[in-house]
Image (cartoon, rainbow over all chains, first blue to last red; front, top):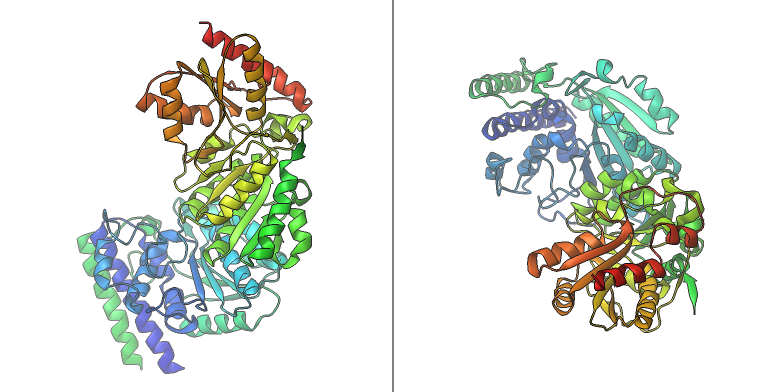
Length: 280
Length: 309
């Protein structure tokens, strides 16, 4: 377990470094939420999910849908690390005629369904999970949501339906970093009491530190064990996690790092990885 | 003359498709008894999902099902199928080019007594600009069946627009071909192009015009997208005037689609019968068709005035 956690920490750190690199090259995009969700994505792609990068359409694969599509840099990084497409593609993010669109697009190997218009993803994931039931397949469906997008009514329509149909193969994850473009969630449109809301909608709720690999893995295990109810993991995270000057800074929701900021950020992330590896 | 509910035929066609293909899945948003998806629900309860009054969730969930290989038919009233879930249809269904077949009922002014809040007169306009979308407005119930089968057989998203009331079955029509119009009457003075319920009205108008010595071509252009460019150019070349009839706002529907083709290829005067940029009201379907100028008399009068200009 200790080894596994160290391995996943390294993967998350690599995702973060790639996010910084690709956003600096793209000169646009969303670092804050990409960094806050890197540990979640590392756990899913390098431990929790059954998937085959050599056969992206393997019918029994677990499904992942990024409802908070703007945080695709973290997902693209993970997909390239898994081998879904060559790493060079990352350096063409958001450029004309490139594979990697500003928001997830179905033509990208490993992307099931495009996303970007917030609030629709949980429904899409629900559809995938219902398809598994119809086909008697035991794959699981994971849907990563932003906290801000929980303000969309569509999310709660999907929440109601998933509980109604007792879709226990569906696992939602909320990247609860407390910031949206215009400011703090609490100031723009409060979500609290968030866990109570999901519970009232009939969901199994697990809360954890979204940067603690051990807690995340435990949360995913609890989700898998739950029968007759969908699970939501409310992952408490820090926007911009891992880069000191991006942490809790709303400006970095949707602003790419400058060349100088890129250098500092990479140095900080390398220092974190070094410290973590020395701990072992 | 045979009169049938297109939605009855839709429900029966779903059962037919459900029997032969287990990939067929159906969803509704609490209107299954009106849209007749209830017929499928009774036969295949495990493949039917009632989403309650939540159209946005229905559309995006349908997309998720389709992404896993299902052929998903979803139904509700045209008002909610188009306007209420437009973002989901644009960004999730159409952008991903998924097999989601929206079969909307209760379209147009002939919803009748329920009044303007339920009279979808803008739906084709909302959906026509979206890439990958197919739009079919069948002229009668048997054609609705053919359109549903074509949607089942053709990859990608569809919007099939049906009405609430019974429609007269058109006797002399040809086999339905997606994207191809059908000429029902040949004349020389004017070409009347119609879709949906107004195809029959146009045919009756053609008879009225004959009595006045005017010979009209009547074409059923049931597929609004992709539009039959070839047929429209041919009609525009053969006739000095075109009159387009649809149970829809004059903006963005069949009239617009026809005018877009003629303006680029063979400019000709194109006139219209449609809702003239206003909301409807309660009333019986026949009263409303008359009041807003959609019925055969109105079409004949308009055609005559155009020809005699």
